[in-house]
Image (cartoon, one colour):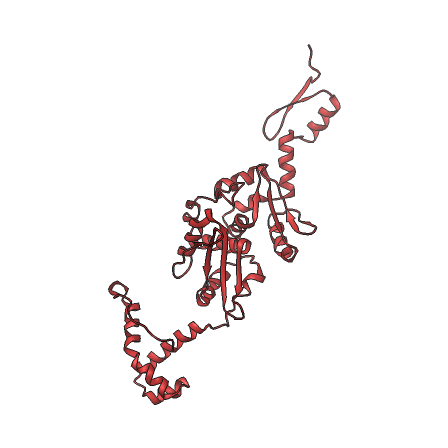
Length: 316
């Protein structure tokens, strides 16, 4: 039986054989370098978005990957979806402009670009599972990043799944990240690799993995590092970390340093009291503790020979 598809040509992209039953449709396709259906869909998606930019190794791309790990979803149809509340519409607009995709606005704002090959490469590179809530990426994914890449990714993760908030009726602030318990090893890696001292995540009473950093000075130092990377941060979260705020703990540490400096300068107790604007009785109390303070200072300077921490000091 003779086939009705008597005319053939090759797709100029994948070289697939295309069949035509009509001379007119063949001529139009040949004139316009017509593609096969799969290549045409890929080309159309490429015009609608540019998800391949997320693979370009820039710190901005690592930031958005961290955001996707926290707040995004990659389905089995290789479509990337992000949905946010309307209060964060400007932030999602930054992402839509970065990957050149359309943003939809109803009761929420969302993007859902589809670019099969780019999404597949992104999923493979960062081990992103369609059910990433329960199946997080392998820890090796984060261990292979340099510090700036890890900081950028973690900043995006905070903007997606983290909370920076003031303590109740206080100006002190803290960072809290709460995830499914399967993310515990990753939160531990973040807490132990990024900050000046180690922070371990814990499983709370509800069964969630929680990483909490409540040291204001460490959070201020962390924010300074993040700002140097020029990332598209979610302003409403990061503005809570106030560089001008001095916590009671920081004040105590600064007073201890200042007191030791005055002692080393051989100032009298009266001169120290005047300089620190404290009573002479308080300075005498500090003076009785100065040997302990010097011991603590020695321990910090000589960690290999650090004795057991049995000294107790009052906050100055």
